[in-house]
Image (tube, rainbow, N blue to C red; front, top):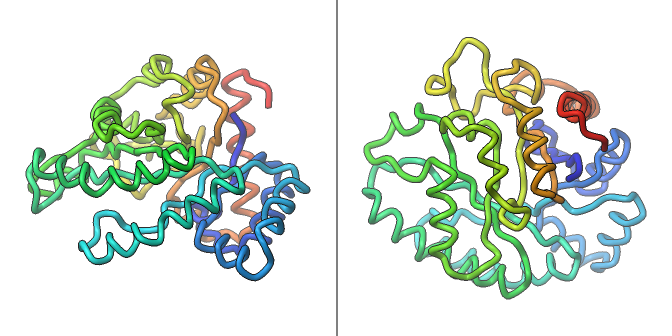
Length: 286
């Protein structure tokens, strides 16, 4: 596994070239990218301009951000789906073989079974396009009870349920986005990661929970840097990933206003420092 730089969750709005330089400057091994932005670069500069820049700077691709809202109205979903094969083909040509999306944990309109069928219909063609291009697709469950309390009908909010949805899509290449915050808020011990395989873990988010709140009181978009409060077991989490031979990106996703208020270089540095400390707490070498 490698420390990965994702500008967006840190409040950094940086084009690809600048994001590459920030990643290199602060010692990240990988970079999350926007496939829509890479399409624009490929159209004007050629595909090689992207791959060459990543290779020249010793960076791996983390994930490419999922480019459309599959939960939107049907016309928007169909338009996104129509554009998706070209995006997946570009990602394949670059060797960017991971993408992911989250599953909303509750809904006001659809009861569980109806919502489950809706997700199968909306996500199966997406998963098939990705599988056809050899791209791994991570599904992220969202744990906080506070989100479910706001809606009429609960939905997928555990690792096991997300795994079942992936299996029921039936396309292969579907795994999990594992976020330590969602392990904590879904009352799942980090040791459960040891029951997964490397192939089942597409990408990983790390952060910490807010001090003074129980797992059920945590709010989804309020978190801290990993190893900041100690509520989540970052050492045990990284050790579990190491034990299964996880070879993908580990990305800081703090949703912290304090971090978002920093200058881009300072936010990137803070994220890098938190990953370094996390690796040290786990007793792992980078």
